[in-house]
Length: 249
Image (cartoon, rainbow, N blue to C red; front, side, top):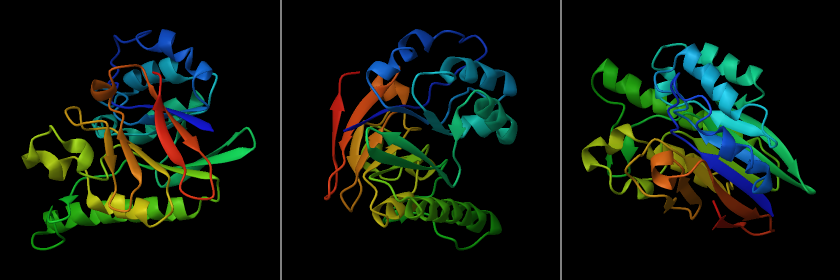
């Protein structure tokens, strides 16, 4: 069994030193890895990234993250990434990480993701340059996620994004903003690659549990949803699709 802890949308500002650390110090008692689903900062500043690094760096389990839209707001995502990686946090964008757990292997492929909407109610690469650029950006990110997932040769595959890959976990959000919360193209990439679990954030008023059209379990781990420092999902590597269940938080 592989225990995957996850949280997103912690939105740490410069005044948040020590807010999560006491609970995070105990993550090794409950999990084998901790995934961070983006929006780790409030405004994407380097100073805020240092707070995130202090909170999540040096934990007893590997920490793997993607950035969110808030982490891009100050237009310094490369610097934010460097601060986090200097603290030992692996930051993914079209890349992968592997964790060995008791004779099994966990592979994580991560991208920030982007918007566009979902089947039947989505944007298309047609018309103005700005609209085409919006959708082409999502298409490129989804392709990089699919390529990363295909490149994993591990017992369990997890897709880590900030934006949602399905509308299921958006229930409770205003339907008018669904196109800005995620894209079905991310879900298609997950379904095409034998992925076992998908984790995302971004939807503060959604719900925790959903599923892709292909039957992959999707979990929204935005902190306003899970209401804790992290939640844990247990994945049992099997020859068939692994089972995923929530354990104590």
